Image 1 (cartoon, rainbow, N blue to C red):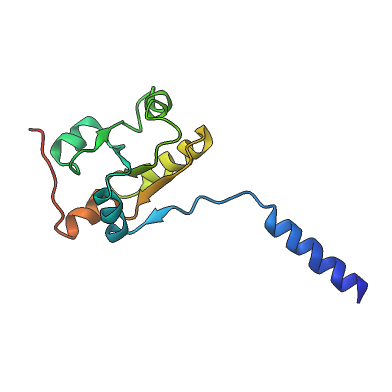
Image 2 (image 1 turned 120 degrees about the vertical axis):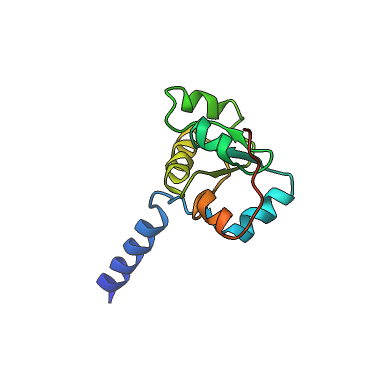
Length: 128
């Protein structure tokens, strides 16, 4: 009985001390609600051309592939909550992990990216 209790206790301790996983992937409806609250910095991590072809209103463009990505994204401020998206959710998911490593406190990634956003007939802004 004592061995069983010890194994159970160790299992609980290990699971509670595990490295925190980033699970801030949110759906379009939740993303839209957060945008509407005006409490978040909105960041598009696609290339400049992709951004110019259509982006969410008021988004900042910080290219994930830029050599200065970490520096540029850090300029937002680690304490500011951020909403991030890309074309499909891949680059923005990677960006979210980078931002977490840099010390950002609150970052959310749009599931499905701009492709999903457009599929739901949400508005896009074009620069050219």
